[in-house]
Amino acid sequence: MPPYTSLTLLALGLLSGLASAWDQAPALAGKGAPVSDADRLYTGDQSSNTITVIKPATGEVLGTISLGDSRLSNDLNPQYVKVVNSHGLGFSPDGKLIVSLAVTSNTVTVFRTEDNSVVSQTSVERNAHEAFFEHDNRHVWVGTRGVDRIDIVDGLEGGVVGYVPSYGGPSKVVFSPDGKTAYANHVRSPSLSVIDVAQRRVVANITGLGDVFSSDMMISPDGQRLWTAHKMVGKVSVIDLVKRRVVGVMDTGAETNHPNFAVINGTMHGFVTVASTNQTLMYAQPDSSRMPVLLGAIQASGVEPHGLWPSADNTRLYVVNEHSDTVDFIDLTVSPPKVVKTVNVGQEGQAIIYVSGAVSAASNGTQNLGRQGLFDKPALNKILTEAQPQSSNNNSKAPASCLVTVRPEVGLDMFQVIGRNLAFNTTYTVSATVADRLISLVDFNATAPMGDGCGTAPQVLSFFKFIGVYELDDLVLTSKADA
Ligand SMILES: *[C@@H]1O[C@H](CO)[C@@H](O)[C@H](O)[C@H]1NC(C)=O
Ligand SMILES: *[C@@H]1O[C@H](CO)[C@@H](O)[C@H](O)[C@H]1NC(C)=O
Ligand SMILES: *[C@@H]1O[C@H](CO)[C@@H](O)[C@H](O)[C@H]1NC(C)=O
Ligand SMILES: *[C@@H]1O[C@H](CO)[C@@H](O)[C@H](O)[C@H]1NC(C)=O
Ligand SMILES: *[C@@H]1O[C@H](CO)[C@@H](O)[C@H](O)[C@H]1NC(C)=O
Ligand SMILES: *[C@@H]1O[C@H](CO)[C@@H](O)[C@H](O)[C@H]1NC(C)=O
Ligand SMILES: *[C@@H]1O[C@H](CO)[C@@H](O)[C@H](O)[C@H]1NC(C)=O
Image 1 (cartoon, rainbow, N blue to C red):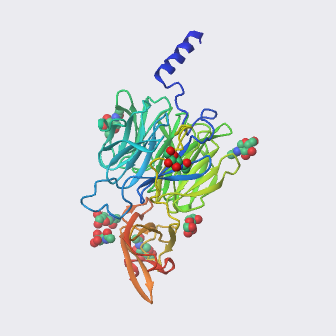
Image 2: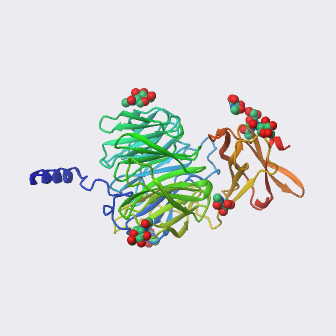
Image 3: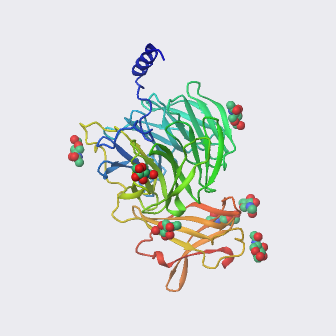
């Protein structure tokens, strides 16, 4: 290449302010900066309605940003106008802004990382789930699952400034490393939209994904592959973005949550959290056109690992354990990788992001932080197996069971049930045995198909005083047919 060409490219890069392209995590080997005091980890804590801010260099939990009231203190009040269900998170390539998505109130809130202050807040279409910033560090593309389009928000001024039709309830948007292409997965279509960012329109559909429901996905830092996770059926579709085709579908396990990538010893590795087994699976995928190879599982310190993000230098992986309200720090430089630290965060963490250079040296970055959602008492968890398994659950290898999680909230407790291997369309009850009497606490129906003739009940929620009234060990799971 003649010298003037690379000089011209360099000048153009500098002028546009994008010379470094993409050096946020996940980053290619040697591209991202080492873990430093300027970096931050953020978790989206759905129940406490907060974002927990962590300093990865030291593991200090600096505090939480409150987005509104925690469950279920005031948010059913007809006069309540704040945010409900802090869930997804994204960031601008320059690391100066993060975006938080609230799935229930459909709110997109942009914060300045330097001091955790609100830059803009926008109401968007139904079920704003996950979003990312365009490479202009300004426009936020929002996966709004309730409608067949992506809302584009001006993150600085606020307001919806455009949209891209994308069929099937777009769940999340990610961008190619050069920022020119966006990808959206869906909750009602087994397809990935390929979007030309400048033209703001879908230019191709990659079809044949492993399920119609894909909540989360991630693109590798080389831009060559994208994995979509299918929580309901426990699978991951592996997509080759070079050839724009599905390479294959991996069976990863019930409640498969988020995928992400890290380059280890020069090889692209993929990771995916599997909540039902409390594990993060680790794969090597040197070639984007071939199926990954399973290397092993990293056991979580807690329950239901959900979001995960590596550091930009590929030495650490951070995993938020949704039902333990903790974040595991995993050392990727040892083989096999292992959890080296665990910190307590806000309640029911969903997404986690790692932002390099979030704060300048001049700031300790603790402005506007509080303690909402940070409890000394951990969430309580127990798996119940159906007391007298009924015969209709024939297709299942495992007995019907559920995970019960109890968390203290303001004035009451959150009682959450995730059903597993249930007989489809059957009614189940969790009860407590108190002095030989069976007291029904909550009924639920297994209406979400799991793909093998079974059903699940992914998010059964009820709120009442549990702690100090009942004991976890006294809980039983029964179905209608048991009666
Ligand atoms: C992608 O799929 C949608 C929904 O079927 C369709 O409306 C659209 O035309 C397709 N786009 C391309 C570029 O094939
Ligand atoms: C996940 O953690 C919960 C709570 O510690 C435990 O009951 C359950 O057995 C674990 N699941 C697996 C598959 O190890
Ligand atoms: C990477 O290479 C180093 C040095 O050879 C080795 O100690 C380590 O186990 C390797 N890591 C993985 C995940 O293979
Ligand atoms: C961080 O800075 C703020 C504002 O300067 C100050 O009030 C606060 O005490 C500092 N916190 C820590 C932990 O240093
Ligand atoms: C399950 O198996 C039992 C006994 O073989 C049978 O009577 C019942 O019809 C089966 N149920 C279903 C839903 O297949
Ligand atoms: C499950 O229940 C729904 C709603 O009652 C019904 O429409 C559907 O046909 C049922 N499916 C099966 C397989 O029983
Ligand atoms: C379960 O399904 C039945 C039949 O459709 C319905 O009557 C009942 O209200 C449902 N129960 C719950 C807890 O949704």
